Amino acid sequence: MTYDTIVRGGRIVTTSDVVTADIGISGGRIAAIGVDLGEAAEIVDASGLIVMPGGVDSHVHISQPSGPGIEMADDFASASAAAACGGNTTVIPFCLPEQGQSLREAVAAYRAKAEGVCRVDYGIHLIVKDTDPTTLGQDLPALLEAGHTSFKVFMTYEGLALSDREILDVMSVARAHRAMVMVHAENEDAISFLRDNAEREGHTGPFHHATTRPVPVEREAVHRAITLAEIAEVPLTIVHVSNGEALDEIRRARRRGARVFAETCPQYLTLTAEDLDRTEFEGAKYVCSPPPRTVAEQVACWGGIERGDFELYSSDHCPFRFADTAGKDAPGARKSFRNIPNGIPGVETRLPILFSEGVVKGRISLQRFAALTATNHARLYGLAPRKGSIAVDADADLTLWDPTLQRTIRQVDLHHGADYTPWEGFEVTGWPVATFLRGQLVARDGELAGAAPRGAFLARECPETVM
Ligand code: URP
Ligand code: ZN
Ligand code: ZN
Image 1 (cartoon, rainbow, N blue to C red):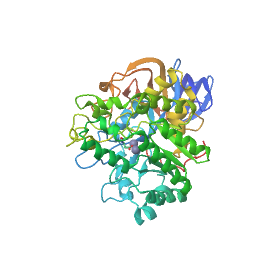
Image 2 (image 1 turned 180 degrees about the horizontal axis):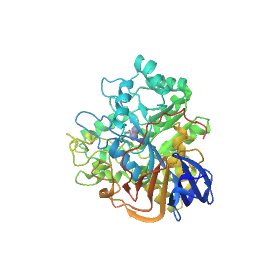
Image 3 (image 1 turned 120 degrees about the vertical axis):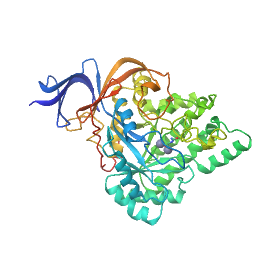
């Protein structure tokens, strides 16, 4: 048998092992894994490199409506270019309806935005902000059956936050269709109380975004979200967990049998609230929710990564330009943190940060890295076994890593639409030197490769909920 491509002699990270072997690729799929597979039209020399499953970033925001006059810094073209250069082959962004738009109309318009410009494969999560009979009785069921098998509900943000009753109603639709519910767990009433107090006392700078969203705000909401999911009898993913107390709630719930999954992000492992206290409004660059916390909470989150408490490590890429009144410098943002758009860019830097801080520093194995960055995302969001692992018959989505390459993260080298990176000057060891999407090279040495965008929409199956 001859193959279209052989990736030769790399250290391949499968879900169970690390083996030095060849990967034979035919028709965009992995046809064989073995020693000395022979010849192919194209040979990729991977000796000295680690071959990982292409990254699956299941938490990114692209071209999402962000309020009057505010614009997200990435469309599908720029976000997916950044994703590919950062070693990813699949992203799952969120579809949020515009004011007055139905969920079905929003998904059709969102898919049109991605068509023909996306450089990596993509699924779409739904955001459920309306709970009227048409949304819950018709649109949501139809969209879930059409392969958008996960959705996010919010417990915070004016205009997005749902009441407990509304969350239960939405969860019961998830139960009927075996969909995955993702929750943004922060208590909106508590935040609003703390924010009003802070403003009254003149505490209005970016740092007070963090002081008005303290750990208990998240801990309480995590507990409540899990409780609601237990009542509705659905599995639940808690996204962007930022601290040890929230994680303790998750661990406690698992001990009593709740099916709850947990995600954390690079910002909770490497940044702190002190970053929001930078002068000259620079703190706004770090405003995201939940906020980065303390070094002690970083340590708690690293403990969760090491012990396997987190299934998912995602970027929560949510880019706004800094020097832009349609971004972080929105009208009123310098008068009060409440007007600073929430979110930070990170899709291109997610993988190098975990490789360097996790694998190279000896905190996690290569297999755990693959699980946290690709395999578990594919399993929990209905893309396995096609995506997320190096196995015969899976898509040939591969990222080749040079584990010794030392790089300093710099905005000038990145491909996202934001005008800054929160990790400017951050030094990493290990870098994704080539990314293959379904057997085709899409990025090499931090730059795009291949002419036309080839990313395709992925209709997803129901989630696996036994990990
Ligand atoms: O601040 C953040 N995380 N913005 C993105 C939206 C979200 O809540 O995930
Ligand atoms: Zn969120
Ligand atoms: Zn998010």
